Length: 231
Image 1 (spheres, rainbow, N blue to C red):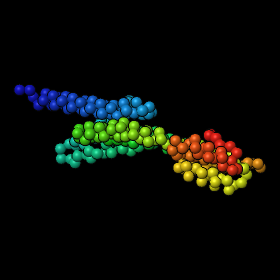
Image 2 (tube, rainbow, N blue to C red):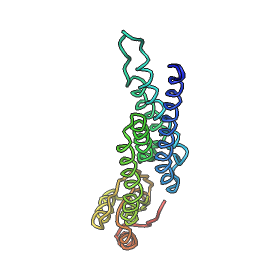
Image 3 (cartoon, helix red, strand yellow):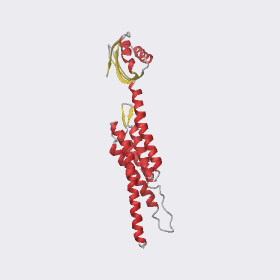
């Protein structure tokens, strides 16, 4: 019969094989989410999501493994000590993907995707395979199917910066704003430039795409309006 050391080596080899299979599963799950991100043209695509998921799995595995290395008679370490740092670490990565431009925030979905992909990796490392696979399916459904529905609805909305030149009477600003509101547009006044013979007003408008041409025509026919254009 082989001695205990041989059985220990066999057991150790099996544990490493088991870890490799978990890492492969994490690569598959993270890669599936990354494929959708790649197709959508997002900066954090296939490789980024795959690596985050694999890394979260390995760190969770190490966190659990290190906690079990205490010698007999001593208190084992906290199995969540290393894994807990994954959440804050991914937070820094997510913050780097968020860009703020002209009052709008871009990249929140990408940041949230990185966060949930790390959670999937942690689930694989904790042997919660059903939860990891189920979460991956939910994430891909939310990103792909719901994303397409969102695109359909967003495509019916139009965001444009509107420049309106009017006669030098400030009450005309309220009149132009009223015309936009009546057409179903939200209009945020972002700049007013006053000259001796005219006033130029910039609006950030959001409203129905189908009503853009009618509202422009109505503004042009409004008494006191000199020019209407896009920026």
